[in-house]
Amino acid sequence: MGRIIFLGIAIFMVLLPDLYIYFSKVHVSFSSDRAKKIGKIFYFSTLLIQFGGMFFLMYYLWYLQADRNGFTNILQAFIWTMFIVKFIMLPFLLFGDIYKIFELFHYKTTKVSELPEKIHERRNFIKQAAVVVAAIPFFSFLHGMTLGKYNFKIKKIKLAFKDLPESFQGFKIAQFSDFHAGSFDNISNVKYGLDLLQKQGADVILFTGDLVNHYAEEVDPYIDLFQVLNAPYGQYASTGNHDYGYRNEKSKSFENIKKIKEKYAACNFKLLNNENIKIEKNGEHINIAGVENWGAGRFFPKKGDLDKAFENINKNDFTILMSHDPTHWDTKIKQHPKQVHLTLSGHTHGAQMGVELFGLKWSPGKYVYKRWAGLYEEANQYLYVNRGFGMLEGFSFRTGIFPEITVFELEREV
Ligand SMILES: [Fe+2]
Image (cartoon, rainbow, N blue to C red):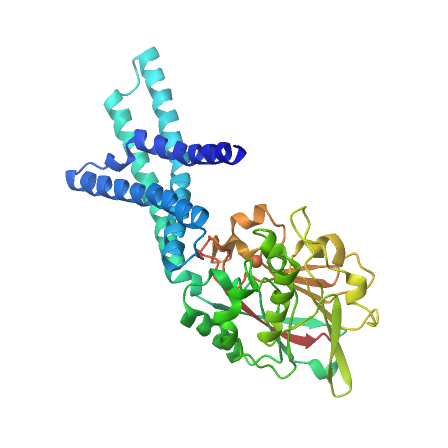
């Protein structure tokens, strides 16, 4: 019963903006007959796909419990697109209506204002502006659900540290995160991304978790592709929240979680579960530590144990830590007596949508996570939040925030 009420409220919330847009007659606000006709065809066909698609997906994915595929991914991404695009139009329409009420009131009371036809014309102009503005996210999302989601970006970052041993001057670390194997729908594009990662010629490759959405078997089609990765100082990983199962008892079972950990090994990644390794070069060394997932909030596993992860590491020894969830940094890592020179995280996916253009950096993710993407520094400690390699299940798009491979080059600060 609770589920039906929730569904009812959800459908109503989705319907509400749509009803407002329908009764605002945005689709017939352009003056020429041809534009009106195109507006009508576009509006009703997208409406059909949006709501028909919603019911189809509910039936196919929830009722039949069928697997997602390229078609359901595109359909679901399109539904999200239309929802977001319409949401963006709402403030314009609301402004147009408030303007109309205000002007009509002014006209009726004073009779010295402009004629209602003029008001109508101006309100139509606001509606047209709403359509033009909404076209930008509409086409951005079309790109995001087709090409954008595999548009891998290499971010190159040079970082200087006083404590870095001399032998590690120029040492290259490649990081990727949030693979989410079950969300992909194109093997050759995933292959392209992993090949690109290997081409960076990193000394060590670090993977900061979320190999799967729910189940160990999701990785099977990609195990062969992972064999291309080969870094001279090894490949290490830490687990993400999704690696502990989310969906149901089967995904949370000991058996599934154990298998997921084995899949990391099958992909040639050694998991650092609250432990560390030393990378040695010319008699000097740096430490790479990894913790199991630790995330603030009651939904996230809190298995990360820093004391265990830093065992046998001296206080000032140069140390890189893999911790999937960046909330760990603010809550625990920064305050820990062991200084962590660089913490590598992921988890946020940069919300998979936003703008990173001409120095502007914005995403709705910033309202959820204080550290949502990129480099942060406090008290001589760095945190880097990778935007993720894959996508969250059911959100098969990357709009403005593209999949990322990060390459760090370490330098000695003099
Ligand atoms: Fe993730």
